[in-house]
Image 1 (cartoon, rainbow, N blue to C red):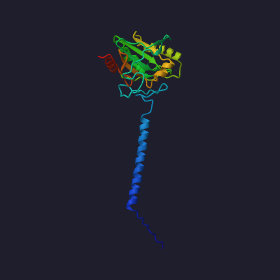
Image 2 (cartoon, helix red, strand yellow; image 1 turned 180 degrees about the horizontal axis):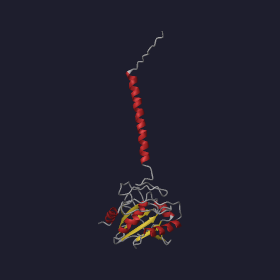
Image 3 (tube, helix red, strand yellow; image 1 turned 90 degrees about the vertical axis):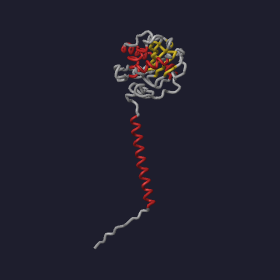
Image 4 (cartoon, rainbow, N blue to C red; image 1 turned 90 degrees about the horizontal axis):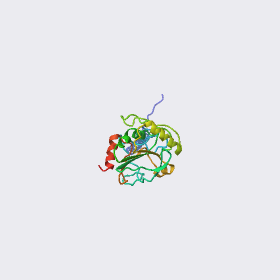
Amino acid sequence: MATTRTKTVTVSKSLLAGIGVVAALGLLGGAFALGTSVTSSSSGTGSSKGFTAPVKPGTTTTTTGSSGSTTPTAGGPFAVGRTVNFGTAVINLAGQKTTLARGTKGTVIMAMASWCLYCGYEDKWVLPMLAKTPGVAIDIVDVSPQGGIANPGPKSPAFSGHDGTGGPITTKTMISIMRQYKTTFGTLNATNIHVYVAPSATQSAWNIQSFPTLAFVGANSKTVVAPAGAQTISQAQSDLQQAMGR
């Protein structure tokens, strides 16, 4: 008759402790990896809230001023306290080389992209309201050599339009698109609103990292407010009053 024997294995307390530590570290490592994966997927580009330095239409990445803010790029062309060079070369929509316009009481400069929905909202609803302030000049400068015209969406809810689409274009084509942009929007006809295209040299010199990049400039040519993204009408009016020292 066969006899079944049971073998007993004795495990020391120190070995058990070691196994427990290894298991805990394994679980911790797995949790860390999972957390990293979730963070990466939730912070990707292409969201409706914003981005950094898009290179083509459809990748809007600038965080808007009304839905949260990011720190503006340090050392940008319109950093707070920096004197704006109003002699910067731009091209008007007639194809003529010129320089930025300057208001007697204040200036609002927006470096933008024709395809950017946030820029479109500013041009459709916000900047025309600011242009009603006496002594203020509005400079709108397209710095993105990409085609497409944004749909700015309604005034409310803000920023509910969508990006336009297009491909790489020349400076000459940028002028043509901005003419169409101005006609399509129909809100940029005030005499103190100036729509420009940046030549390649200005595009390189400014090196804009987000759209739109705004500057609210005082009468002394120094930037007083440089918001981290697009502004609602009330926010922009407040920024302009601050720049004008009111």
